[in-house]
Each structure stands twice: as C-alpha cells, then as structure tokens.
Amino acid sequence: MRDLHLPLNQTQRVRLEAALHELQTLAPAAASAAAVTVADNIPVNHEDNILKGHGTTDQDGEVVATLCGVVERVNKLVYVRTLRARYKPEVGDIIVGRVIEIAPKRWRLEINFSQDAVLMLSSMNLPDGIQRRRTAVDELNMRSIFEENDVVCAEVRGFQHDGSLHLQARSQKYGKLQRGQLLTVPAYLVKRRKLHFHHLEQYDVDLILGCNGFIWVGEHVVVREIADLKEDEQKLSAEAETFTPIETRRHICRLANAARLLSALGFTLTVELIIQTAEASVSSNVEINDMLGAEFYVQTAEGEAKRRGDLLGKKR
Image (tube, rainbow, N blue to C red; front, side, top):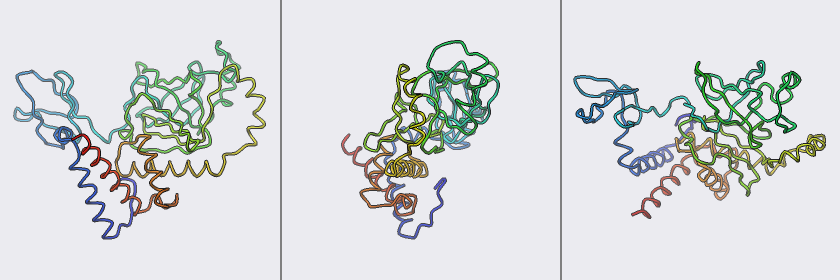
C-alpha cells in the first residue's frame, strides 16, 4: 500500500484485493504487454537494426530488460522507462520547489531532482513589477523576496552544460506560495498536461500539480496586474491582519487528504479525480481525519474500479 500502512480486517482485505484485481483486468492490453520486469525478453525485429537503450542488454541474441518498467520505442531506439524513478525535468515544466539556500544573485531550490535547481534573480519579476537591470540593492534585498523554506512555483527554463537546472518566474502566476499545504507524491503520478494551475471555485482553493511530484493546495490568490502592485503595497498591513477562513482550511485539508489517498493507491493524480474523491468523502459523511483510514481507503479503490468499468462499458 505504498506510503500508507493500514490495519485492514479480513473483510476489508478481501474487498481491496477484489477491487485491485478488477482494476488490473480493466487495464488496456497494450499497456500490460509493454510492462516488463528484470530478465524479460523484449520482442524486437532484428532486421530493423534496432538500438538498445537504457534498461536493456543483449543476451544470447535477444534483447533483455534489466529494469522493471514500460518498454518505449522511438524510431529504432528501444529502452525501458522505469515507473518509480526520480523526476526527469523537461523545458517548460511547471514545478513547485522549496528554497534551501540563498546564494549570490540566485536561490537554490529542492525540486525532487538529482540536483538542486537554480532560480536567478534576473529570471523573475521584482516586487515593483518594473522591468529593469538588477542592482546591488536588489541583491541585498533577495531575502525579502524568498527566504529559506519558502515554497515557490516556477517554470523550467533550461539546462546548463554542467547539468544544473535553471528556473524562471517571469509571470504573475509564479512566485511564493503561502497559506496552504505542500504534498510530496511520486513524480510519475503527475502527468504533463496543458494546464497545471487549477482554481477550484467551489472550494475557493488553488491546486497546483507540479510535474516534479510536489503538489500545492492553498487558499486562492488573485493574480494582480502590474499596475495594481503599488496599490497592493499600501494594503500589506491590512492583509497581514487577515487570516484564512476556517471553512477554507477544511477544504484545503480535505483536498490534500484526497491527493494523499490517491497517491497511496497509485492512481494518476488529476484535478477531476481529486475533486471526486473529496466529494465522495463528504457524501459518505467521512471526517477529514478519517479519510486516511482503512474503510475509506477501500471505498476509494472500489469507486475507482466501478468508474473505470462504467467508462469501458460506454466505449463499447
């Protein structure tokens, strides 16, 4: 059960095994055929002069997998993509990270990658919103923008020759994240999509699904225009006195527990599935602190199996 170790009774264990078995039978045949374990033979056409990539080896004239994962084919290249691997960034990815160090003209962020990411002072908008050359005063005021342990949303800008990852935050939708929860899930459960920022209007909550497996659930923040920044500065003292309403906090905790539960079950995280799980907990009168319990865990697996079965029936 991955990250959750729940004390299931005999009935719950039987129900869970039945739901997981049904989910396995509903999986597409092509996906099942592409999955391999260590020492499995990978069917290839040797006349095509294939190229053996990562996770493969040649044994007695056959291509054999050396990793557990899914077989991928790109033209003549055949390789195995591991499922539970670390995050592999691509240019344009939306990521959520945590500041771990403030260096000269840059911040270093932990983003679940093999190396720390770098956010340059010149790669983000200044608090005044004016596009200008960064000065020594701006460098001295870096700690007033981000400090250690701050949660930041940014975009992957590119790679340097030494393999380091550079980020950028030149839009108003990027920047410091406050008043919420940061969740860590396996990166392969978050698929790359066109939209990773979600405003859940019914809950007044922002949901950011980071491609690196960091998920942010927090109070909704209205994106201000640059012209309104000076007016916002005058309201800083008033905003400091405000706090997140209790009802919004409950919504944040419920959605966060829904994401934790789906991650423990190994389901791909989408905004629709997270909302559906949260609404199912409300309709079942499950308290927020009981969402990670054994009974709702089994109910979620059964509900997902039923949903996928209904979708498959409609397609037929």
